[in-house]
Length: 539
Image (cartoon, rainbow, N blue to C red):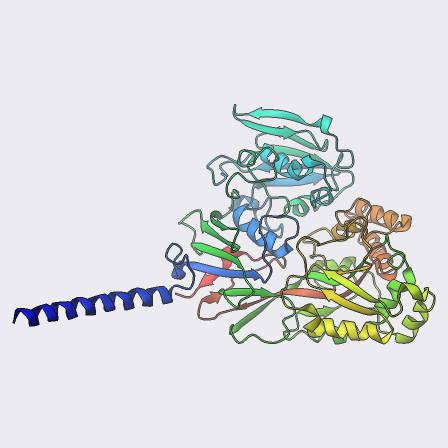
């Protein structure tokens, strides 16, 4: 009898253990990610931003929408996204009032805006954030191009830098750019080289996030711990091995997702997955959204330090060889728009475009232009085209790339695309490669900003020609931006007709998503970033 009871006890305990194991296993299976126990799936939206591993706060070698989406969530913004909101009621923007009077721009900060380390944001933080990347005196960031309007940006000297001690414990470098003057904690003045009524919108970018000086090491480039800002979300997890980054909402009073998990993974995981030019519809996601406004241009950049890149006939032959409409139609969701200009033909930018039709294909003229070029430079050669294009799929297997290759082959130009190498994302100074495939994100406010990359001293080595006329047109366009769009139209026409860059199409940002998880994208009114707090989880 005792033996039977013992057997029953053992069986009972065994059944309990099995039940516990099954329950735990069921719970683990219900958790989509390894850290779902910490960041519950019913409170977390996971965004798979790219196939390619990227660090979202690195301002170089990172896709624009990655930089801007992360920065907007964590660092906040200098001004509202489209410059039309009432600044004092937008909790994610720093400035209370701002305006420009001629070449002088004034800004007044809101009081009571705090970094995530609980220290109030001041005007000294704005100056520091603007000059931080320039303190190395290396041309390895976008800061100088973005701040090109400021007096003194072309004359940066170490001897101009002085240290300011604020509140007895904050040491700020100051004075590097003579056109920036901090009046007091809540007021700052900017002196411009030319009038630009869009100055504040131009410098409100994830490439110049407003950050606290005390959270950096002595180089002012590396965070001591996690990135810190004053945005709606704070960073709570950084996994640089698996490229997983989690942010948590700062205030539980905000009716926004509690956690956002940013991942970078080739697999079809995540509630939302970004892509460019998917060659077929993806059965792993049942939802799809295209942002209506243009995200970026796409096309060929040329190395003007090479004989071919500097040859106008070679550049024009490439442009004439392409049927842009046919190439653009190869995208399954229609996110490509045929074009040959740097500025898109939509939104406010269309007013600044050249008033010329999109270049049509003409094989005969293309071939005749190539005949003027020594054959040893191009005939029977296969040009390796390196890229900055966020996909891990073999580009040469993508329909739109295959179409480009076939069309160029018709005129005798043979090319092979190389997928993006994050250690080689632009021409080097002594580069021998002739072509590069990439694009420039659409400016929110300044139609001249992308043309600045084609000036001498640009962050992008070798893509600018030695062309005084181009420089003159750019200077006239920037000087007269607030007066008339005609000067930018002239610049755009010269740029397009001289094939400084051969634009092939414009791209709309596009995302796949799971309808079971995502109920709404909310009001996504900016084409170059995802406003993560606008996203809604299904309950």
